[in-house]
Image (cartoon, rainbow, N blue to C red; front, side, top):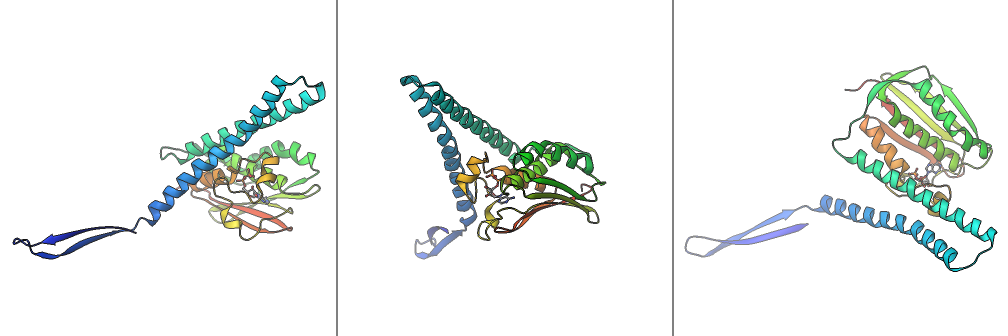
Length: 258
Ligand code: ADP
């Protein structure tokens, strides 16, 4: 609470009282804190790969390393530059989505086509872990949406499901017609998310397990980007999850736009 006060006097300069203005700055402070945290997070996320790239490059310049070690160091440098690239892409994407001038490119989207294409793209990653991708439900539906943005969200949910599920798991994409809405569930039988983390996973850079997410190449921004895209469509994204059982991410989208 911010308080501004001033005494007031009558014409003969006698003190008559005081005016106090109470200003509720809770929301302002919260937003300011979020902005500060975001800048600190971005700096940290950028610094970690850069420190590693610089360190390995320096060692390679200074020491005469054998071929094996050179390859090992170079592959670390490659991996870390790739991480930086993904992070910068996600940051640019997020800033684009947060601009008020941001516009979706609405078109008639055939769900079957969108799901088939997404599953096709995720196949390589699924195969590496022996994970089965299953499509269920009424895929023969259309809605008005931004095809590329919607595909980006679904693909992101499928990649997450693969990343956070042990080998030989199952990832199911199921589509339901819900009277004016389309519901898409992406479920897995993987590690799940603890109850305390569930309300936070759509926050920028929030990860249940930082080390694990970095190893799988995650930037920690995917779900907040997904939430932005779905909300821009006047839809909703939610999660139900249980540790060691699995997770269900649900998207509900209106078929037509108001
Ligand atoms: P990341 O790039 O780290 O995957 P996201 O924003 O996509 O970032 O997800 C945020 C966090 O939510 C992840 O780090 C992970 O801890 C958790 N998460 C997301 N999807 C799943 C899932 N299907 N199963 C378990 N945990 C998940």
